Image 1: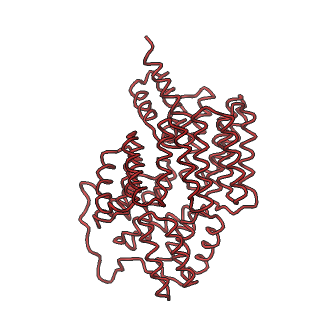
Image 2: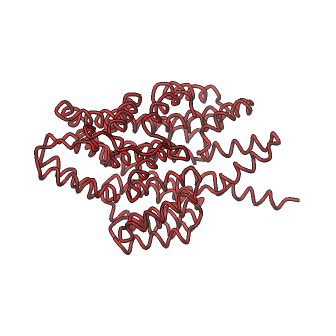
Image 3: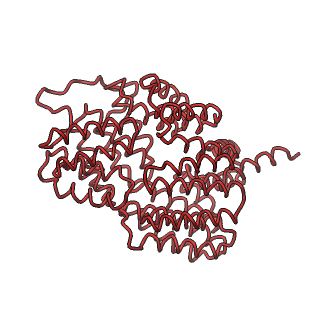
Length: 492
C-alpha cells in the first residue's frame, strides 16, 4: 500500500469495523442518534422522485435514476442532495459541473450530514481527496446504520480501485441488513476483483435469489463469470438479463465476452446493437471505443486506426474530452512507430486542455494515463531523458493528488523506467504496487524469471494469463502472453 494512503485508511478503518472473526456485535445506537442521513427538501413531490431515483440506482438503472433525480431538482430547485448525486452519476461533463456547483451553493441550507456528503462527492471530483475522504469517514461514523450510505461509499471506493476497503464497508452493510441487494452486488464485484471467486459467486447467488426478475443481477453475474473465464456461463446470464429487459443494455456484456473469446466479428455486431440504444452520447461513444478495441484483437491496424480516429472525432463533437483523449491515447499505445505514437499522445493531451467541460479528477487521471504511456514509448526509442521528465510529472501528481489511478500510473511508469535503466531489483516494489496492470505483471514475470524466482514467476504468470477484462491493456498484453507461455511449454 502506498505510504501516503496509509493514514487516510487508518481514519477510514476507525469508522468501519472489519467484518471477520473478532468483529464486535452490532449495537443499536442511542435513541437520540439519527440512523439515516436526512433528506432536506420542502417538496413531497421532490422527495418521492428522489426516493424512486435511489431505488433505481440500487437496481443499477442509471438512465431512470438520472431522470428522477432531475425531476426532484425541478420540483425543488433547492434540493442539494439530489444535485450532488446528479453530479456523481451523470455521464455529461457539463451537467456534472452545474449540479456540483449548485449543490455546493446550497450546502449551507441543509443538514450537517448532507454537508458532509457534498464535501465528499464534490471534493472527489475536484481532486480535493484528503478533505473528501475525511468527509466520507465522518459521514459513515455519524450514520453507522445507514445502509444506503454504506453502499454509496462502497461503490465510490470500487471506482477508486480500493477493493479491500470497499469490501469492508459493504460487508458492514450486509451484516446490518443481510438482504440489502445493492450492497451484495458491489460486494461480489469486490471479492472478484480481489481474486476470491468462491466468495464472489456465493455472494452473487444471494443477490440473484433476492431479485431474480431484475436484469442487473444476471448482468452482474455475467461479468463476474467472465472475469473467472467462464465465458459460456457468462453469456447465458447476459442473455437472461436481455430477456428480462431488452432495454437494460446487457448487449454490451455479450459483446465484451465475445471479444475476450476471440470472436471479434460477433462482438462488433453486438456492440453495433448496443450503440443504437445507448442512453446518452457518453454511453454511445464509450461503446464505440470498446468496439474499436476488437480491431486491435484482430491485429488489423488499418481498421483500428480508422475506428479510433472516428471515436476521437465523435467524442470531440459531443464535448467529451476524456473519451477523446482516451481514443488518442489508445492510438498511441498500439502505434508501431513510437515517434508517431508520441504525436498521438500529444493529441490526447491537447484534447484534455481544449474548451470542454471536464472535472479536475477525470482530467488529471487521464493525464496520468497518458504520461504512463509516454514513459513506455520514450523508452522504446531510448529517450530516457524524455521518459524521466514524464515520470517526474507523474511523481509530482502522485504526491499531491490522492487518486489511486494516478498512484498506479506512477508506479507502473517508475518500474518500467527502472527496468530500462538496468535496475530490475529496484523496479520490483513499484511493479508490485501496480500489479493489477497487465504490463506491470509482464515486467514482473520477466524479472522473476531472469532472477530464478520460479514460484513468484509462476504465480504472476498464472494471474496474468487468467486476466479477463475487456480493456485495451488486456488486449495488448494478455493474448500474446498466453501464446508465449504455450510456446515455452512446448520447447524441449
